[in-house]
Image 1 (spheres, rainbow over the protein chains, first blue to last red):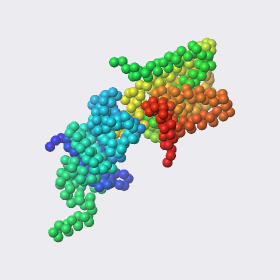
Image 2: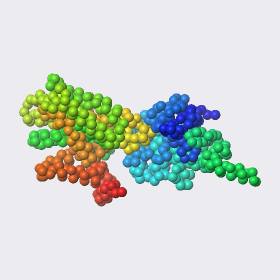
Image 3: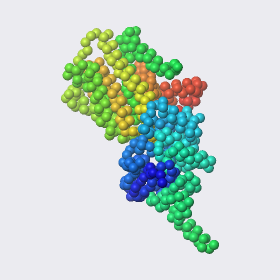
Image 4: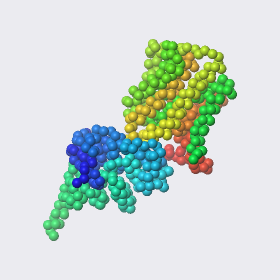
Length: 255
Length: 327
């Protein structure tokens, strides 16, 4: 088994009386694609916000390379090598596509401190990688949603992350666009980047992930290989409801 | 290989500075004084651009730093300090105040930040009004400069020019450095900037400090020239408003924009004052509204757009600018 890159121990996040993430343990191993699934409101995005320091956890530890990061500021965590994309894309709307990516290259990983010119070169490489080279002079606000999602990719990859956290990259995309996004995620992994991907589409996550963690009402209810998880009764209950499980049981008994 | 286009900005900047250096050799003292006023507001506008234009935080603090620098020079020159040393001390004091204030008030965004910075200027005015060391509401006298009008007009003109060149050069280097990129990232989307690794707190404070240094120095030159200060004169909110309007007219976030805006605005207000003494403020107000409506990103940005899309597109650009307001 390969080494643990990112680890959470008892991560808990409360908003007033609501516990959005409740004592969740997770490990992300170097080189893998870990899927985090769960119905809407399960606490997936909140968990990402805890990891990236945007909305720090109330309790628990988060370790990156064994170093505790749960109290660090977002920019420090990014510089250590943890990048993310947002479900609702967050481009620098008034800037050109290329400049958006330059920001990531300039301020991301501090392993190689870059000046503007080097950052521009890296940005051009990243735009070629995600297939946005021909749009590099356009304003970010002029892109289609699918293109903006790819821009998010390029921007976070330009920070030269070791682990990339993807928040519902497929939300709002059509079937072809989803296929393109999935092949892009595979391409990123081939570059040696570890990936944690959040999804609520079961089909996408089973195609994509090596391992899956299932969240429901902020708690981890299952973990394992995609095939194990999808046949887990608790998971099916969470996704399709008690009635569906009862109906399936009845059908099985009848036949 | 020598690339002439890469150097054109340096060339035009050099030519501009040279013209301003030679100006006093060719014009009357009246005209020199007018350009001194232009340079003074250009300093304020260029400095505002660090925090307001690049970083997107609408500061009303220029008057606070201007007044702070003016009073620093007044008090220290009365204590026997050399004029240029008082400018340096004023700059340091402005930077320290910006640093101390920046930590709490840069947590605020938008309107709240604007009101807080406005409050800062008012606070300093009240302070100057009530302290003994500032002479309170009675004002404070400064040592008179010796020498004839030809000499001191040039002395103050070149002092102002020196501060202005320093401000524009600083701005030029900042916009080409990662610092400038970071500030623009904060303006465009502060959360996303943090997620791409920008230390937003640190960068905002640096921008605020940069925006305080040059107004404080300009205030020092103004004080020595005026030879008498009253709180209401230097902690005047009009200084802040002028800085903002000139940046907008010239082009928010561009290096030369605030400078161009300052020159145009001063000439325009001069002309309007001569032509319609009674109503010149009203005409100026109408022009400000038109600028905000049709060229909200300023003349420099407009000229870049026209350059890349051709003169034929001018109408289209203006039309699309005003269409932002249609719901």
